[in-house]
Length: 201
Image (cartoon, rainbow, N blue to C red; front, top):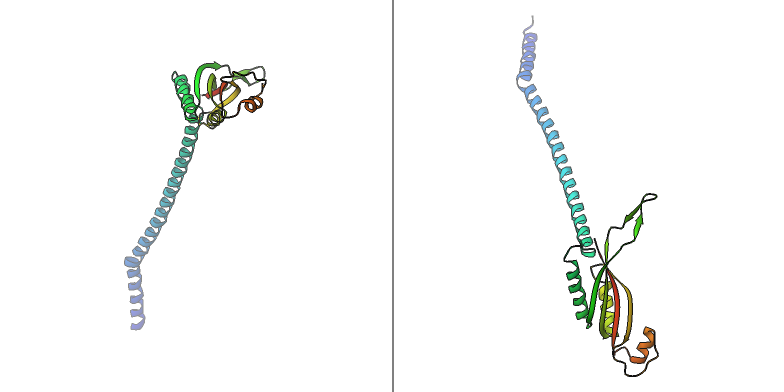
């Protein structure tokens, strides 16, 4: 046999052996590393997705928390301290606007029922405290007080308001608010009877 063929055959066998011993394991290792890279990338993507979900939950929690806090400030939870706190709140608004509170009383009102299932009645989910107060002050001062009450963070409504001249030595004929103001002037002192509803959880 020609030596050239023998040498070529030996070289081919050697190449196969080298490829089997060195190249194939390196190829296998490279494939394994590539698989690990893909697996790691998937893990990172999953972790990012989890973190995003956590941030979304935190955002919803903060939004809900802020809404609940606003609800608690608008409709405070009823407690044994609610009436004293309401008294302090109203007296503070009156004092700020130059109104002198001469008498005040509180009564828990019966809330209307809301319709439920046919033939069933259920109470609405809040309490109402009706405040009846007598006060003195100028008409402008009372306007400021009423605006403060209705814009207060605590949900309250002014239900009725009537006024009379605080000191009326002369006879007057006016009966409506506009007529009394026209006779006495908006800067005079008036006596007021006011009814306010304050709401609670």
